Amino acid sequence: MSLTSVEAQHVRERFGTPCYVYDRAALEAAARAALGFPHAFGFTLRYAMKANPNLAILKLFRDLGLHLDASSDPEVERALRAGFPPGHVQLTSQVPSRRLEEFVGRGVIYNACSLHQLDRYGRTFPGHDVTIRVNPGLGSGSTKRTNTGGPASSFGIWHAYLDDAKTLAARHRLPIRGLHTHIGSGADPAVWTRVAHLVLEIVERLCSHVAVIHRGRLVAQGSLEELRAGIAAPEGSTTTLEQIFLSLVGGDPAARPSLEELSWLTESPR
Image (cartoon, rainbow, N blue to C red; front, top):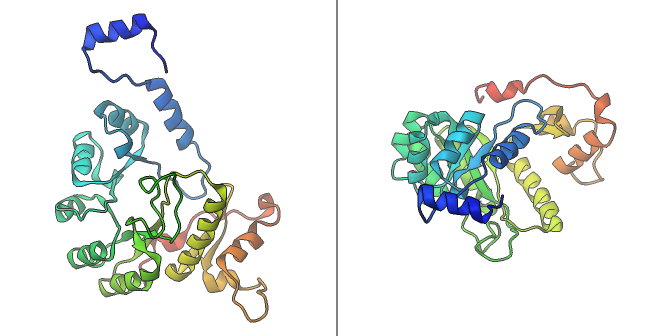
């Protein structure tokens, strides 16, 4: 969006300066485009409110049905004051929350970014669902400030400590319902591809059940053992999740039956 000199003068006269002007139509169009992404069994679009926590923008996205990802206690507070239901707000913060008990008690979703956070959450809310953020060991960004993966980044649980995270989750009876990775704002497809391999390896170590989605359609679900059945692995090796995925989507996805739901997502952990 660009303003003519006459429009800029009108804004200055009406609102004073400094003044920030946003294109509501562009924001709404982008949000609707993202909301229209194809999905197989449900889709939650979250706006990272640290990008711009302007109250008018938050209310616009709230009314369109977006959820929020908050990166600090003040952002959670601002989101709730903007009228977002607590269950539509997820807290993902490197800094331990000083209001964890209050926010989660009200229904805010928690995404643990460190072993300390996971342990504290488990002690406070044993038996509750949790999502964890994992650093896969590789990132992408033009500077260290925009690279949020790899050894130079403190974002997420380091992948080598995944077993420790699983131990803590088991100790506190926390079903890990989600895996979050974010490697930065770099634009190197080769790095994205490599990170996708790494994340699939993490999923194999973390998850008891897996769903395979291709082009917005659910093509398979089950335990890793069930998905491995019938897919040959190289001699002396185990079929990887990546090989399972490529095998399942290698044919025509339209010819495969569509599964209506992921029943195991609502089952209690055994």
